[in-house]
Image 1 (cartoon, helix red, strand yellow):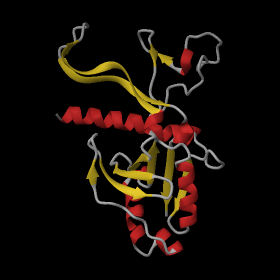
Image 2 (spheres, rainbow, N blue to C red):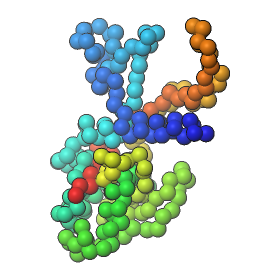
Image 3 (spheres, rainbow, N blue to C red):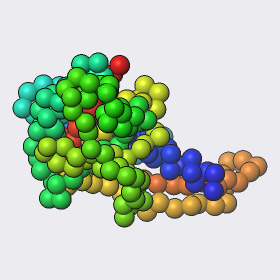
Image 4 (tube, one colour):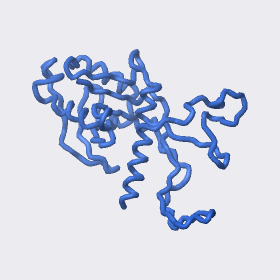
Length: 229
């Protein structure tokens, strides 16, 4: 049970922060050669198989998102100066690609969730603009996420506490559009037991195995907000 939990945590971190081996230079390679030895921007393992690693959503937005313009997808929220006017303008960009349900999931670090929760007080955006934010009670959706609802002028955000967003990512809020991402699963996850080595290794092992990642389309429809002090 403990190893199963650790495996799930590793997958969550890969889906958030993973970086693709070799970047995204499709058809190029790491050594500068023109052949396809490292095709698809990857590297080969000891058996000559192409190694592919998923790009995490946070890392993809940091590397390929934009911080200005009509297609802005990365936003910085200063606790001291962020105003209601800025919030309205930012939410217009966040919801410019309107999902069918009119709702987007926002995975929040503890700092980001605290920031929005404190907007009902007299500090931050409320103090800057005389505005109070409307956040609903904690609920649970069909996927098992606990969330609170943040009403914006352009759509609804489900604020989901995300413990993996901690440390340097404490103030991050990752907003995703379900219609423009997918779960890429190449082989079914499995629990493999009694694994033996063929080189006289005097032991056996068990392991959780998964071969999966996330697929991202229309990166402009996903957003990253960074709350800073």
